Image 1 (cartoon, rainbow, N blue to C red):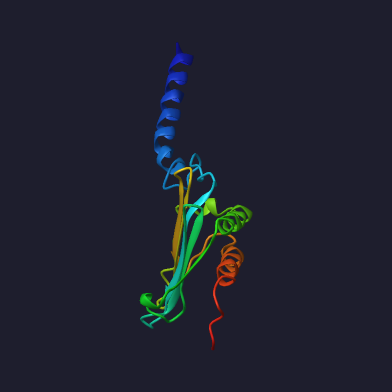
Image 2: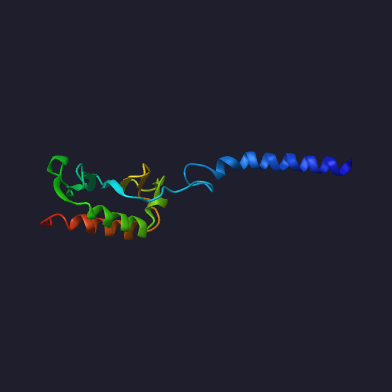
Length: 169
């Protein structure tokens, strides 16, 4: 009979620990049981970076797939939105984007919302990827970046910049 009480008490303690730990194990897309989105065909991609004290500082890129064509838009640095440049290209552009997304595992960025509260005048980035399987990747941060951010964004920007004339200094 004494063994039964110890076993029952242990079960209660274990159950209480599981209940207490559950929110941590499954929290905010970064918990132990969370799953990253499955990467599939890209239907929409957007990336933007803004910051500083200048009103128009920053730039953004977007690409949208429709009817086998891709409409790519770029707002150059320090330009208002109405000065954005748009070009049309084929669907292979989205395949190239997907290759970079897979290479750097951007699906693991989903749910990243970094914030360095000690920086008062820095940069903010925003990234969104929509895929043909209905899943999305959404990430953003203020002077805080996910793993491989610099390398991945450098390759992505190079893909976009190849479509647009060089800005003159």
